[in-house]
Amino acid sequence: MADPYSTLGVTRSADEKAIKSAYRKLAKELHPDKNKDNPKAAEKFSDVTKAYDLLSDKDKRAQFDRGEIDMEGNPTNPFGGMGGGFGGGAGGPGGQRGFRAEDFQGFGNDQVDLGDIFEGLFGGGRARSGGPGGGFAGRRPPPRKGADIGYTLRVPFIDAATLRDQRITLADGKTIDLKLPKGLEDGTQMRLKGKGEQGPGGAGDGIVTIRVVGHKLYKRSGDDVRFDLPITLDEAVNGGKVRVPTVDGPVMMTIKAGTDGGTVLRLKGKGFTRKNGTRGDQLVTLEIQLPENLEELAKRLDGWKDESDPRADLGA
Image (tube, rainbow, N blue to C red; front, side, top):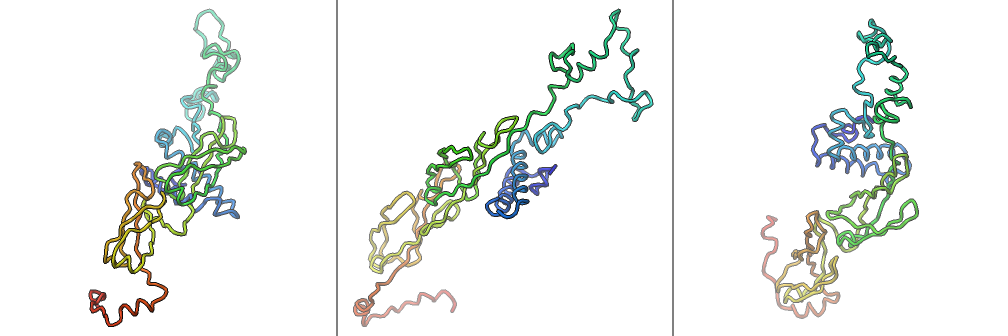
């Protein structure tokens, strides 16, 4: 997995939106919860996450594009700028010239100790410049952090819509309260810094994938919440005020006289929270329900007939 672009299946010119979209699609397909019997999927999921982590960071992406770091974020050439090296004579490969003792003469009367020079270059204790461990020691790749740990958090529908804090237990046994982000969707991932496995360079991160649990009454439509509300025939004909459940609790809603079944009414600000902090709406579809005992209704309608044609515009 040397190229994060090919790992995510995007071109090098892909923008942030395309990279994020590709990552979400692959993360859903390869998530360990969906591939418990497929270890290769878990490995690919890890690769995809690493690729996204690198490309979503503008600085790291620029460094990778310039060839300065690899997929893991490590320098690609810690000994860059060394030139021809120390081996071979003047006739060596590529015309590179080796060092000879006489090349170091002419610096005064002091005798030059080649050991001092080479130890200084490679971080030896006798280096005369750069301090202890000088030379190239400062250009060694930094120690790697520990591996990330993945978590799946199932969030009830109403909690997701209202961004209610959630409690999650981590791998170390600690329990924390998690503040849900604005713009939450099913599959949204949250990064918990330093909550992964320990490593030489510090702890990795915790990656929490949010799964929004469905609801028996509500359905999500973008940032809106859809809800079917049954009303009586009397309420449809004569109108009235009815009590309507919402994700924020019940509210009163007015139904106009002569309202048809299938009419959609809008309750402002009763949907999911967007990234900008505003909220979607609750769309209430009215469903007219006839009474269970139709005898009384039939008696009242005896001798009356509706002469209108509600299907006239259907062309049937």
